[in-house]
Length: 85
Image (tube, rainbow, N blue to C red):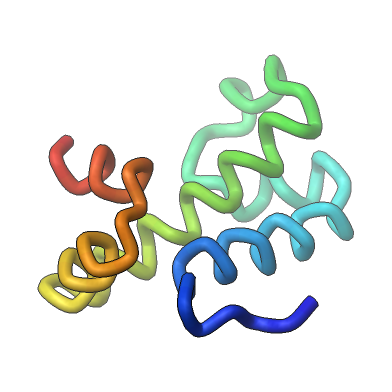
């Protein structure tokens, strides 16, 4: 999959999800920002989706102002929701 520079956040999310698809549930639980007792109740697909959210949130929190500019510029509603929490 090639990276689409016109939609960098969405492209990154797709790449992260592709990475998550190579991991089993135990591997994902080790890197999720939730305790294992919580993620034990989740399906593999829920863990994969949360992995993408966690990674994007981590990147966003380390980019501060740049993240807001990118999410608004490329209109990524899911990321804008997280920014308002």
